[in-house]
Length: 64
Image 1 (cartoon, rainbow, N blue to C red):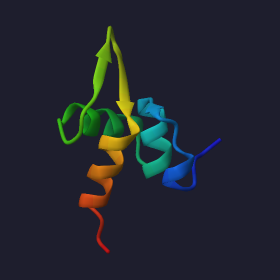
Image 2: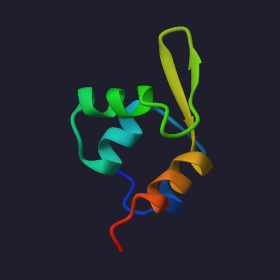
Image 3: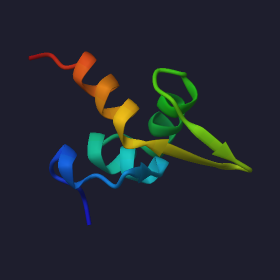
């Protein structure tokens, strides 16, 4: 299920959650996560993304 609002995003997201929410490719989602634009946690080969830093980044990059 795709989150339609920021409130619906899980507190700890996966790359797939960002991919679906932003409607971008898997490669673009990984590039974004690896860019250092917001805090991520790497566990082995997996990335976990806390919601708060992602939302803060998202709001800072808003075109509104």
